[in-house]
Picture (cartoon, helix red, strand yellow):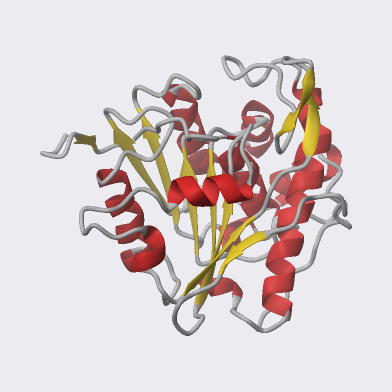
Length: 294
Protein backbone atom coordinates (compact mmCIF):
# COMPACT_ATOMS: atom_id res chain seq x y z
CA UNK A 1 0.00 0.00 0.00
CA UNK A 2 1.34 3.47 -0.78
CA UNK A 3 0.68 6.80 0.91
CA UNK A 4 -2.48 7.37 -1.06
CA UNK A 5 -4.16 4.25 0.29
CA UNK A 6 -3.72 2.33 -2.95
CA UNK A 7 -3.10 -1.39 -2.67
CA UNK A 8 -0.91 -2.46 -5.55
CA UNK A 9 -2.42 -5.46 -6.78
CA UNK A 10 -5.08 -2.72 -7.71
CA UNK A 11 -9.43 -0.45 -6.43
CA UNK A 12 -13.15 0.59 -5.88
CA UNK A 13 -16.26 2.73 -6.79
CA UNK A 14 -19.02 5.13 -5.54
CA UNK A 15 -22.52 4.62 -6.87
CA UNK A 16 -23.19 7.26 -9.56
CA UNK A 17 -25.89 9.73 -8.89
CA UNK A 18 -28.00 8.08 -11.61
CA UNK A 19 -25.72 6.11 -11.71
CA UNK A 20 -6.90 2.92 -41.58
CA UNK A 21 -7.39 -0.86 -40.65
CA UNK A 22 -10.74 -2.49 -41.07
CA UNK A 23 -12.70 -4.21 -38.38
CA UNK A 24 -15.46 -6.67 -39.17
CA UNK A 25 -18.67 -6.95 -37.17
CA UNK A 26 -19.50 -10.51 -36.22
CA UNK A 27 -23.21 -10.04 -36.93
CA UNK A 28 -25.63 -7.22 -37.69
CA UNK A 29 -26.30 -5.35 -34.43
CA UNK A 30 -29.86 -4.54 -33.35
CA UNK A 31 -31.06 -1.11 -34.44
CA UNK A 32 -33.10 -0.26 -31.35
CA UNK A 33 -30.34 1.18 -29.18
CA UNK A 34 -30.72 4.81 -28.00
CA UNK A 35 -28.79 7.59 -29.70
CA UNK A 36 -25.10 7.90 -28.89
CA UNK A 37 -24.06 10.61 -26.45
CA UNK A 38 -20.92 12.15 -27.95
CA UNK A 39 -18.57 14.74 -26.46
CA UNK A 40 -16.35 16.19 -29.14
CA UNK A 41 -12.68 17.06 -28.55
CA UNK A 42 -11.85 20.69 -27.89
CA UNK A 43 -8.68 20.36 -29.99
CA UNK A 44 -7.77 18.37 -33.10
CA UNK A 45 -9.26 14.87 -32.90
CA UNK A 46 -6.54 12.25 -32.32
CA UNK A 47 -8.22 9.50 -30.33
CA UNK A 48 -11.63 8.12 -29.31
CA UNK A 49 -12.74 6.60 -26.02
CA UNK A 50 -15.93 4.51 -26.02
CA UNK A 51 -17.29 4.38 -22.46
CA UNK A 52 -19.97 1.91 -21.31
CA UNK A 53 -22.18 2.68 -18.32
CA UNK A 54 -23.37 0.29 -15.62
CA UNK A 55 -26.80 -1.25 -15.12
CA UNK A 56 -29.55 1.24 -14.33
CA UNK A 57 -27.71 4.16 -15.91
CA UNK A 58 -27.28 5.43 -19.48
CA UNK A 59 -24.73 7.18 -21.65
CA UNK A 60 -25.53 10.82 -20.78
CA UNK A 61 -25.70 10.08 -17.04
CA UNK A 62 -22.40 8.20 -17.10
CA UNK A 63 -20.75 11.09 -18.96
CA UNK A 64 -22.00 13.58 -16.37
CA UNK A 65 -20.76 11.42 -13.48
CA UNK A 66 -17.42 10.64 -15.11
CA UNK A 67 -16.59 14.27 -15.88
CA UNK A 68 -17.71 15.60 -12.51
CA UNK A 69 -14.74 14.20 -10.58
CA UNK A 70 -11.16 15.37 -11.05
CA UNK A 71 -7.60 14.13 -10.79
CA UNK A 72 -5.02 15.47 -8.34
CA UNK A 73 -4.22 18.08 -11.01
CA UNK A 74 -7.77 19.42 -10.55
CA UNK A 75 -8.62 18.45 -14.13
CA UNK A 76 -11.39 16.24 -15.48
CA UNK A 77 -10.56 13.43 -17.90
CA UNK A 78 -11.90 15.54 -20.75
CA UNK A 79 -9.59 18.38 -19.73
CA UNK A 80 -6.61 16.04 -19.48
CA UNK A 81 -7.23 14.79 -23.03
CA UNK A 82 -8.53 17.67 -25.17
CA UNK A 83 -7.75 15.73 -28.39
CA UNK A 84 -10.05 12.90 -27.36
CA UNK A 85 -13.58 12.29 -28.60
CA UNK A 86 -15.78 10.54 -26.02
CA UNK A 87 -18.59 8.23 -27.13
CA UNK A 88 -21.11 7.17 -24.47
CA UNK A 89 -23.47 4.50 -25.84
CA UNK A 90 -26.65 3.65 -23.96
CA UNK A 91 -27.88 0.12 -23.46
CA UNK A 92 -31.27 -1.12 -24.51
CA UNK A 93 -34.08 -1.30 -22.00
CA UNK A 94 -34.41 -4.95 -21.06
CA UNK A 95 -36.59 -6.98 -18.75
CA UNK A 96 -34.81 -7.77 -15.50
CA UNK A 97 -35.65 -11.23 -14.21
CA UNK A 98 -34.62 -10.31 -10.66
CA UNK A 99 -36.35 -6.92 -10.43
CA UNK A 100 -39.27 -8.03 -12.63
CA UNK A 101 -39.36 -4.78 -14.56
CA UNK A 102 -37.83 -3.11 -17.59
CA UNK A 103 -34.53 -1.36 -16.91
CA UNK A 104 -31.47 -0.05 -18.71
CA UNK A 105 -28.97 -2.90 -18.84
CA UNK A 106 -26.56 -4.39 -21.35
CA UNK A 107 -27.75 -7.90 -20.48
CA UNK A 108 -29.98 -9.61 -17.95
CA UNK A 109 -28.31 -11.25 -14.96
CA UNK A 110 -29.79 -13.25 -12.12
CA UNK A 111 -27.13 -12.76 -9.43
CA UNK A 112 -24.01 -10.68 -8.86
CA UNK A 113 -23.18 -12.77 -5.82
CA UNK A 114 -22.73 -15.72 -8.17
CA UNK A 115 -22.78 -14.57 -11.82
CA UNK A 116 -22.70 -18.23 -12.91
CA UNK A 117 -26.31 -18.67 -11.75
CA UNK A 118 -28.73 -18.97 -14.68
CA UNK A 119 -26.08 -17.80 -17.14
CA UNK A 120 -28.46 -18.45 -20.04
CA UNK A 121 -30.24 -15.19 -19.12
CA UNK A 122 -27.12 -13.26 -20.15
CA UNK A 123 -26.72 -14.63 -23.67
CA UNK A 124 -29.14 -12.53 -25.70
CA UNK A 125 -28.16 -9.19 -24.18
CA UNK A 126 -24.44 -9.89 -24.40
CA UNK A 127 -24.74 -10.95 -28.02
CA UNK A 128 -26.72 -7.84 -28.98
CA UNK A 129 -24.57 -5.45 -26.97
CA UNK A 130 -21.22 -6.84 -28.15
CA UNK A 131 -22.37 -6.63 -31.76
CA UNK A 132 -23.52 -3.05 -31.20
CA UNK A 133 -20.23 -1.88 -29.67
CA UNK A 134 -18.19 -3.61 -32.37
CA UNK A 135 -20.29 -1.75 -34.94
CA UNK A 136 -19.54 1.58 -33.22
CA UNK A 137 -15.81 0.78 -33.38
CA UNK A 138 -16.07 -0.27 -37.03
CA UNK A 139 -17.84 2.93 -38.04
CA UNK A 140 -15.38 5.11 -36.14
CA UNK A 141 -12.53 3.53 -38.11
CA UNK A 142 -14.26 3.28 -41.48
CA UNK A 143 -15.05 6.97 -41.69
CA UNK A 144 -11.32 7.54 -41.32
CA UNK A 145 -11.46 9.47 -38.06
CA UNK A 146 -8.93 7.43 -36.08
CA UNK A 147 -7.09 4.10 -36.44
CA UNK A 148 -7.91 1.18 -34.15
CA UNK A 149 -4.68 1.87 -32.27
CA UNK A 150 -6.15 5.19 -31.12
CA UNK A 151 -9.43 3.77 -29.82
CA UNK A 152 -9.85 2.89 -26.14
CA UNK A 153 -12.71 0.84 -24.75
CA UNK A 154 -13.79 1.71 -21.20
CA UNK A 155 -16.51 0.14 -19.07
CA UNK A 156 -17.77 0.32 -15.51
CA UNK A 157 -19.60 -2.44 -13.66
CA UNK A 158 -21.89 -4.21 -16.16
CA UNK A 159 -20.38 -1.95 -18.82
CA UNK A 160 -16.97 -3.46 -18.01
CA UNK A 161 -18.42 -6.97 -18.21
CA UNK A 162 -19.78 -6.16 -21.66
CA UNK A 163 -16.66 -4.33 -22.81
CA UNK A 164 -14.22 -7.11 -21.92
CA UNK A 165 -16.14 -9.55 -24.09
CA UNK A 166 -16.26 -6.95 -26.86
CA UNK A 167 -12.47 -6.69 -26.72
CA UNK A 168 -11.98 -10.46 -26.80
CA UNK A 169 -14.59 -11.00 -29.52
CA UNK A 170 -13.05 -8.38 -31.80
CA UNK A 171 -10.60 -9.17 -34.57
CA UNK A 172 -7.99 -6.49 -33.88
CA UNK A 173 -6.14 -4.97 -30.91
CA UNK A 174 -7.18 -1.53 -29.66
CA UNK A 175 -5.15 1.29 -28.17
CA UNK A 176 -6.24 0.36 -24.67
CA UNK A 177 -8.90 -1.11 -22.40
CA UNK A 178 -10.04 0.25 -19.02
CA UNK A 179 -12.29 -1.89 -16.84
CA UNK A 180 -13.66 -0.48 -13.58
CA UNK A 181 -15.43 -2.49 -10.86
CA UNK A 182 -16.31 -5.25 -13.29
CA UNK A 183 -16.35 -8.99 -13.75
CA UNK A 184 -16.23 -11.55 -16.56
CA UNK A 185 -19.51 -13.25 -17.54
CA UNK A 186 -19.06 -16.93 -18.42
CA UNK A 187 -15.62 -16.84 -16.82
CA UNK A 188 -15.55 -20.48 -15.76
CA UNK A 189 -16.73 -21.71 -19.15
CA UNK A 190 -14.05 -19.68 -20.96
CA UNK A 191 -11.27 -20.75 -18.62
CA UNK A 192 -12.28 -24.39 -18.92
CA UNK A 193 -12.18 -24.10 -22.72
CA UNK A 194 -8.82 -22.39 -22.67
CA UNK A 195 -6.98 -25.11 -20.80
CA UNK A 196 -3.32 -24.72 -21.62
CA UNK A 197 -3.88 -23.28 -25.11
CA UNK A 198 -2.55 -19.86 -26.05
CA UNK A 199 -4.25 -19.36 -29.41
CA UNK A 200 -7.68 -18.02 -30.29
CA UNK A 201 -9.41 -21.37 -30.84
CA UNK A 202 -11.03 -21.48 -27.40
CA UNK A 203 -12.32 -17.91 -27.71
CA UNK A 204 -13.70 -18.51 -31.19
CA UNK A 205 -15.50 -21.62 -29.97
CA UNK A 206 -17.00 -19.80 -27.00
CA UNK A 207 -18.26 -16.79 -28.96
CA UNK A 208 -19.57 -18.98 -31.77
CA UNK A 209 -21.19 -21.76 -29.75
CA UNK A 210 -22.34 -19.90 -26.63
CA UNK A 211 -23.10 -16.35 -27.74
CA UNK A 212 -23.81 -16.99 -31.41
CA UNK A 213 -21.27 -14.41 -32.57
CA UNK A 214 -20.25 -16.23 -35.73
CA UNK A 215 -16.68 -15.50 -36.78
CA UNK A 216 -15.80 -13.67 -33.57
CA UNK A 217 -12.21 -13.63 -32.37
CA UNK A 218 -11.06 -16.07 -35.08
CA UNK A 219 -7.47 -16.81 -34.06
CA UNK A 220 -6.56 -13.31 -32.95
CA UNK A 221 -6.24 -13.87 -29.21
CA UNK A 222 -2.53 -13.15 -29.43
CA UNK A 223 -3.20 -9.92 -31.34
CA UNK A 224 -5.81 -8.79 -28.83
CA UNK A 225 -3.32 -9.53 -26.05
CA UNK A 226 -1.25 -6.60 -27.30
CA UNK A 227 -4.04 -4.27 -26.16
CA UNK A 228 -2.88 -2.74 -22.86
CA UNK A 229 -5.45 -3.42 -20.14
CA UNK A 230 -6.10 -1.48 -16.93
CA UNK A 231 -8.45 -3.04 -14.38
CA UNK A 232 -9.38 -1.28 -11.15
CA UNK A 233 -11.61 -2.22 -8.26
CA UNK A 234 -12.28 -1.03 -4.72
CA UNK A 235 -12.00 -3.41 -1.81
CA UNK A 236 -15.16 -1.96 -0.22
CA UNK A 237 -17.32 -2.35 -3.34
CA UNK A 238 -20.71 -3.54 -2.09
CA UNK A 239 -22.24 -3.89 -5.57
CA UNK A 240 -19.64 -5.98 -7.43
CA UNK A 241 -17.47 -7.80 -4.91
CA UNK A 242 -13.74 -7.22 -5.35
CA UNK A 243 -13.24 -11.00 -5.63
CA UNK A 244 -15.06 -10.87 -8.97
CA UNK A 245 -12.48 -8.30 -10.07
CA UNK A 246 -9.72 -10.70 -9.03
CA UNK A 247 -11.38 -13.44 -11.06
CA UNK A 248 -11.54 -11.19 -14.13
CA UNK A 249 -7.84 -10.34 -13.80
CA UNK A 250 -6.86 -13.98 -13.34
CA UNK A 251 -9.06 -15.16 -16.22
CA UNK A 252 -7.33 -12.78 -18.63
CA UNK A 253 -4.01 -14.22 -17.57
CA UNK A 254 -5.24 -17.77 -18.11
CA UNK A 255 -6.85 -17.06 -21.48
CA UNK A 256 -3.60 -15.62 -22.78
CA UNK A 257 -0.50 -15.64 -20.61
CA UNK A 258 1.06 -12.81 -22.61
CA UNK A 259 -1.79 -10.35 -22.07
CA UNK A 260 -0.63 -7.03 -20.66
CA UNK A 261 -2.81 -6.41 -17.57
CA UNK A 262 -2.33 -3.69 -14.96
CA UNK A 263 -4.54 -4.27 -11.92
CA UNK A 264 -5.09 -1.55 -9.30
CA UNK A 265 -7.00 -2.17 -6.11
CA UNK A 266 -8.04 0.75 -3.91
CA UNK A 267 -8.97 0.34 -0.26
CA UNK A 268 -11.89 2.79 -0.31
CA UNK A 269 -14.12 4.12 -3.07
CA UNK A 270 -17.19 1.92 -3.21
CA UNK A 271 -18.66 1.13 -6.63
CA UNK A 272 -16.97 3.97 -8.45
CA UNK A 273 -13.62 5.49 -9.36
CA UNK A 274 -11.97 6.75 -6.16
CA UNK A 275 -10.91 10.28 -6.86
CA UNK A 276 -8.46 11.75 -7.25
CA UNK A 277 -6.27 8.63 -7.00
CA UNK A 278 -8.43 6.55 -9.33
CA UNK A 279 -8.49 9.28 -11.96
CA UNK A 280 -4.71 9.74 -11.64
CA UNK A 281 -4.38 6.01 -12.39
CA UNK A 282 -6.50 6.34 -15.54
CA UNK A 283 -4.58 9.41 -16.72
CA UNK A 284 -1.24 7.68 -16.16
CA UNK A 285 -2.42 4.58 -18.03
CA UNK A 286 -3.67 6.56 -21.03
CA UNK A 287 -0.49 8.62 -21.19
CA UNK A 288 2.13 5.98 -20.47
CA UNK A 289 0.70 2.50 -21.06
CA UNK A 290 -1.98 2.77 -23.73
CA UNK A 291 -0.96 3.03 -27.37
CA UNK A 292 -3.06 6.09 -28.13
CA UNK A 293 -1.51 9.43 -29.02
CA UNK A 294 -3.82 11.95 -27.38
